[in-house]
Length: 138
Image 1: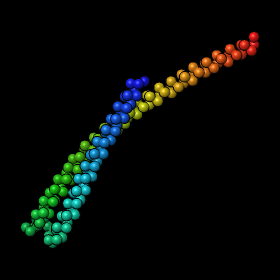
Image 2: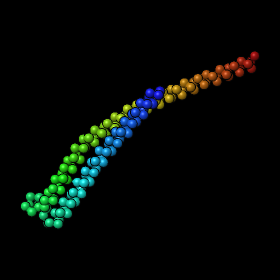
Image 3: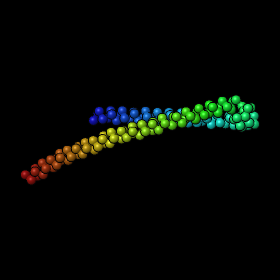
Image 4: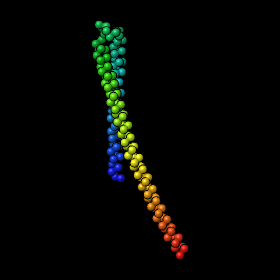
């Protein structure tokens, strides 16, 4: 029984670790997207400031070109993390399933143990009642 409790604690730790990993990847994706949006805003502001929105125009601002490249790199990184995000979600699902299996086994054992205790107690009570009954008869 003790080893199963240890195993359940281990599985719970693994679930918690997978949740932390998932949260970390989600935070990175969110941060990349937030930074990309800020760069988009800066690009738009720069385009409005100089009055040129055509990236092919010879006088298109270099800052806007560089910011667009950084934005695209961030969005690509966020997309690449999408695969890791799905893998982390699947790992978490699997860890939760394993934990649930062990918790159900533990619960089943506890129910069985409780039923055995109850049956044993009932046996003792029946025995006491039978002795009392035989004394009263005698």
